[in-house]
Length: 424
Image (cartoon, rainbow, N blue to C red; front, side):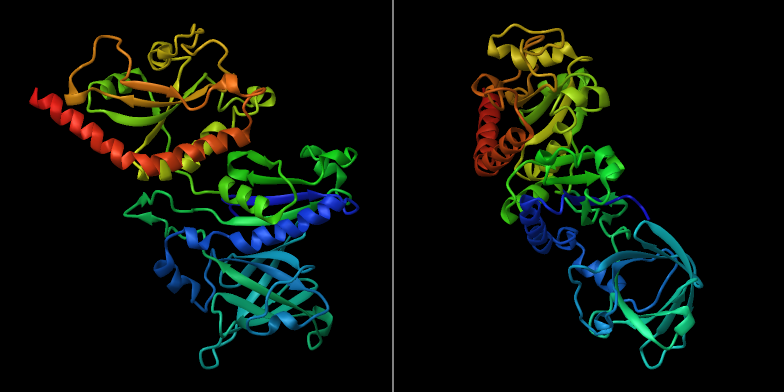
């Protein structure tokens, strides 16, 4: 099954009281956020696929098994705590693969002739046989009962599976990704580190160090990274973290010296620029010592659609390769520059600046001249210690809110200045 998903995962110790509170908070966040269906912008497009009452090669279903209960066979029955989570991949018209508790089980699939508008299907493995049908009220759901192969007429458990439509390319329009549309499902999980200590230890959640629990992370498997929640075990705070960490990303344009020269000879435009050191956002070694080295670009990508909608462009500049360009954005501070063209004392990850680039009327600026205006997003000297991820997220969020409030007026002022320059 593809890894294109995002996981909010709770690493816990059963005897830890805070872990119990976090479990409740996770449940509330999961209920309020869901998988992100409403963020896909495909309500109309998804309807036909979701209502399909047949199985096709490549279809993926996710759901649960409820042992010693037949309740899930009933139309509309919901998932409950204690259910075993499973996934089903349709390999062909006669084969499926069941993913359960870390195992992959191939099963034989057979579908009976429909009775009216209803297909009955059977999935048989070495030990168990699943018999089911599509839900009459929720067509995307597949429900049924489970029996032992040795006693086919005696149902002992039940299952419910929902068609996973995330892998369909509804988020593309004419072959182009729709900006700001969610392309990955937001999934939820929990790991009992008392039961699986070696696994948790490899992931940095050592159960022999209880002060590290509870620990909640947003995992991004396809990007091989994660973000850690450092707040209290409260539902609204876990919700806010998960919503922010899993926003649909946009593009952060990588700029070089040529791009910047072109921008300075064009009409004024407003930018939030990430001035980074070479490797600061991609080097795994630097991320061990630098809290923000691998966080800045993901945070900016998540905010990019909102900033662009408000009229603020967003980009990044490799200051190690383009030191002179970066120096032109920071020399207004009156501080001494380092080898990368950044003010002395700039953190390892780099810095963020709000910049107005260009010339009214489109006239070329003086050679090597600075942009019209350039401001640091925050004053590093006002912080106690280095900026953490929460500071970064709060600052970018504030920038987006201010842009949404002020930029229509600012854009009007730029237009007026350009018009006045043209008249002169």
